Length: 399
Image 1 (cartoon, rainbow, N blue to C red):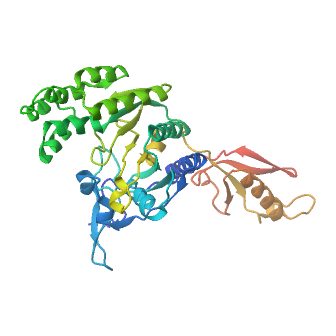
Image 2 (cartoon, rainbow, N blue to C red):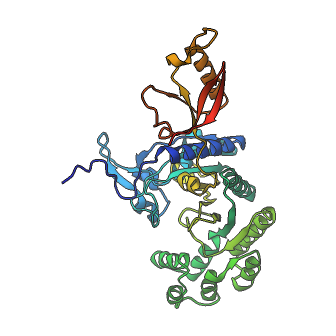
Image 3 (tube, one colour):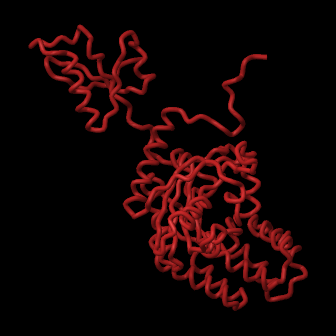
């Protein structure tokens, strides 16, 4: 059998120079943008004890988390599959601030299974979170920051879907569903599987039964909220949720908003408004977010919280910026052919020009002797040449 040590596990891949450069360009731009909005950067660890990583985030995250035994303590550890719980832990347990805290992050996460066809099991998650403010102002800020982040990547969102988990929670509670039955109904609603929903609510009395059956159809523009007010029972939690969504519709009227009252992603830890961003070229959401108040309770301190996260590698794929600009090939400073007419040091002259170009933000690669014809492989598309006593940049003519 041939040596196959170079093979990687399925849905795990290297990020090669061209893509890596694009990813890093977007990472720096996004983190700088978050910083300009007052978000502080944190770097949580790749590994934590399982009970800290999973907390109350639901069965799905548990299934996506790789687990191992810590050789030092003998305790079960997990490789993070989501950074958001870690950031909530930092806010609740380490920073311990009284006022509003804005945090951002970027790092790899690992999934036991890919989220979809051709998806990676190692997304590069980037996101921003707001802690300490329970009002809708924080949700509005988070959604606007998400829109700005996508704009920075030259990605135009085709729509921002808004929902509210309190609607389903209120109906499930009113129906008196057992936890297992509620979980099954949640899955059917998330898949918009109306026949299964109909079977699961057979024993539920009206008007709750009719309301649950109506949820998969309650999606579309702002008029959905008016329809929902007519077909859903006047429970306090539902009225508050619809009021919240109307306020968001007013505050974010310049964005392409849609509403989906059966979109329950993140249901197990979201506590209020939930949102997702979609764009042309992506089969699924490019960003997910929402409110998760009191999540920090498991870390000893409950705090209101809202935010969003994205896969940076997916953003790089969708961004129409194209390939990053190539590097400039510069001659090796000690090349005898570079001797200048006035007898000044060729090495000093080349180095000075290289330093000047690099200070302007250009990537400059010194052409090591003996590698003619391979500069384009090194990412060069231009070359620095001498014209008299001056230096000029020309297009690389290399085949």
